[in-house]
Amino acid sequence: MRVIFDKTELSDAIDRVQRAAQAKITSNTNNGYFIAAENGKVELQANDYTIGIKTSCPAMIEEEGIIVIAASQLQSTIRMMPAGDIVMEKKKEENMVSFTCGSYFARFPTRDINDFPEVKEMEHTNHATVSCQDFKEMTGQVSFATASDKQKPLFTGVLFEVDQYRFIMAATNTHRLAAKEITLPEEASAQGRFVVSGSILSDVVRLLPDEEDSTVEISWSKNHVAFTFGSTYFITSLLNGEYPDYHRVIPTHHDALVTVNVHDFQEAVRFVSPISSGVDYHTINFIFHEDAVEIYEEDPAIGRSSTSIPIKLEGEPIKITYNCNYIEDILKHSEGETVILHLQKNGPLLVEQEEDKAYQYVVTPMRGRH
Image 1 (spheres, helix red, strand yellow):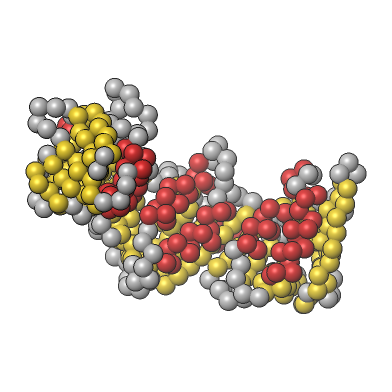
Image 2 (cartoon, one colour):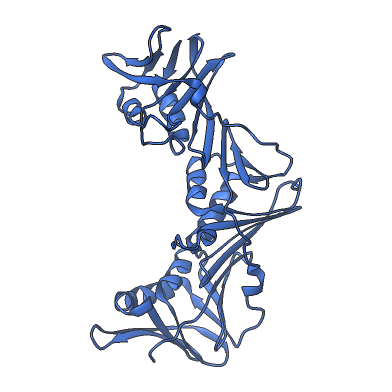
């Protein structure tokens, strides 16, 4: 087997499959990189049973072959080689494969290709196509609301809902919720409702192309979801469990409506956050008056910080407490000059975006020490 790669092309292809290549090298794991050079193309695969990734890489094939490289150091080794052509070669009588680029040389052991769990594509019966730009934006707007507690694995994921031309992502840790809906460019082939791991979703986003017209096809079955973009196929297991109906959490009425400048609100919350981070549950207190909101937190052992900013209030004045981090998070992901707060005296807060009504964020109040 002898294949000539451009260093950048090979390095990029290895980076795409790296997430699924098991780093722990032991004799009883089917790990490593699968590289097949045949029929005029080179395909790379990695599979750790939770996720499987396969992609293609441009190359000049001088002698066809299939190998499995059991080396966690492959990625860093190729990356450190100089620009130019890299020659990958494996002689038939050897169980080693070499990589040569000028005076740079490395070789790694190969494994039995029959032991490698090849990435199999599932049927694309259930599928929807989304622009990569929309997919990245949606993921950023909702994934931060997932739970970090591994004791609630279902809530560490992001809910996908697909129905005709509608595509929704939603995430919650049961104390706050973020949801975003878009219109698909073409009708989905089927309805779908499933939960994708938040950490794996971030890996998908990292691999998506940046071109404006690039798209990703999402296909799903009972236990798996796959993402197809460019020459890359990424498949992973779904999170098991019945995700709650998040629509029921979104408030349908309010006691007060507040319009506030995003930058002013963010600066005020940021000012109080050092005190908030030192108290139990990171609470922060708000008193919404007719034309201003007072924002403060205090603790006898730590101190007090407070400030106020102008607002426009419609409805009754309200005194309420939230988790400071949850308020900071939505302000980081808000665009436009203002946000609209749908307040309830003893119920959840709905944050509405000035420029994006399809993006909703809900936070439940906390018990404060007023």
